[in-house]
Every structure is written in C-alpha cells, then in structure tokens.
Image 1: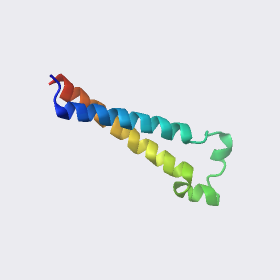
Image 2: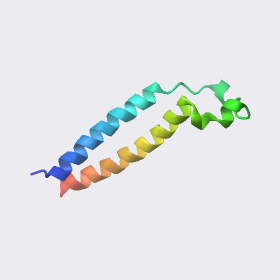
Image 3: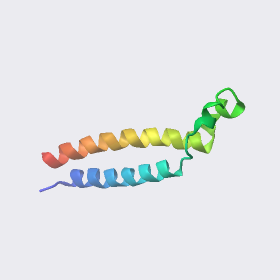
Image 4: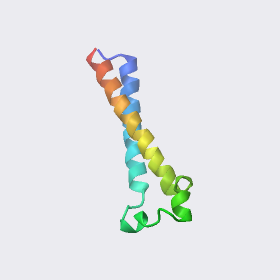
Length: 78
C-alpha cells in the first residue's frame, strides 16, 4: 500500500514535469545570432530578461524534477 508521502511525491513530480515542459516551450530558440551578442548590453543583462528568467527556471525545475523522481522511487518501493 502506498502511503500519503508517496502520493505527495507523485503529485509534485507530475506538477514539476508539466511546469518544466511549459517553461521549456516558452523559451525562444537559441541560434547563432545570440552567441554574437555576448559583449552587448543584452548579453550583460541576460539574467534580467524573460529568456534569462526562463533559463534559470528551467535549471531549478530540472533539479527539482530529478530530486522528486528519486524521492518518489524511494517512497514507492519501501
């Protein structure tokens, strides 16, 4: 029988997976032109733009997804 902690882990994993998919789909594509902007004002302030925020959010959600997958596996197999 699966306990309530396992159900919470499963629900959080699904929520984070859906959020990660949405955030990745919202990002603009990275082409060769964006690499040339490294020394411009945009390149220096990339973290403050929508693409920068989405990029950081993708990293955080990816880490959360991996951790939740491990936690879900541990709680379900107990």
